[in-house]
Image (cartoon, rainbow, N blue to C red; front, side, top):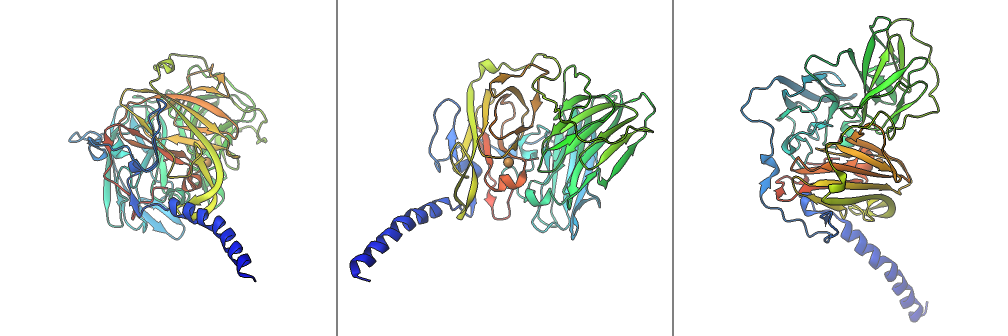
Length: 468
Ligand code: C2O
Ligand code: CU
């Protein structure tokens, strides 16, 4: 090859390789880092900063944002977590024990890691706990190593259906059973029979409260029964009640205002979300491969109805308690997908506002702000978006305003091509994860944070802490 052609070939190769090498190099994450030092600061007022120039938060440490100290707990639980060949157990079972509390009670849970080699934590999904109790490894605590323990304390200020799960290597630990239910009732109960249906796939088998097939619940004919359905899996699931009426009385731990009676309608419950279904015995609650049979001589199974409940119009309006028109911050969370490098690994990665993790927005607020967020999904796939520490109310979908009951969520399915406007009050200072609850997607970069001005974290992602 003549020297000129060789030179030209080398130059051409360089033109391709040098930028690729630069992109690769620029994508590498430090061995350990504070999430608050990453991301593109976004103050929700039109000014965004540059990646890598963290919001230098002084002031309060996450460590100080604990639940009540020095008060006796009303509910006191110890959970001993073990790792075995079949998965994880808590006090010997998976799902772990159901934790029950009444509204306003102080819950204390001592997590003991007996043998989870990667370390573990507990996150209280849907409970707006103080930040230090949130259980996110590398953000609000260090992962608890084998032989270690960690105590969580929080007051439950919302009656409803919640769950707990590991937030350390969560895509792995949750799938393999490191989870359980948390039920908060009003004092004196909900006024009907109260049952739980925690749904989880163990090795591809759909189970309810850990058992496959049909689960029986005692009830006399005509008795009303609340079935609290928790979807602990990554994918959305459907629930339906063939041959008898159903009401969706609560969503994500918040009662629906004046829920109407439904017939032959499927209720979608996305990954991480909950729906409380009120049925009248005898009734059959189909859960897509498993079922809850309420009472005797229940109706026959039937395929999933085509019609799907739309919470945008379900129930009747009631005061929101927050004025979205008075929002002091407004954010966009645009989900896309593009080829690139994530920590040096080439692939098709999720993007947020056009960038790959960690160059994603760091949403910044101050305590007391009313916050609007516009979730836009242009990624080719649906995503159950979960903001920690807050409940948000849905304002609109694709520009169509919500006209039913106030629709409060902690986990919202945003379908491909959809745009949701939500609002919440920044009333819980801390550093909060805001991610897709299809947990492998969070590993693939569909993860951002909301931080309060003046709050910093001493914890580091990396090393022993792998939250996703
Ligand atoms: Cu259910 Cu970030 O978690
Ligand atoms: Cu996702």
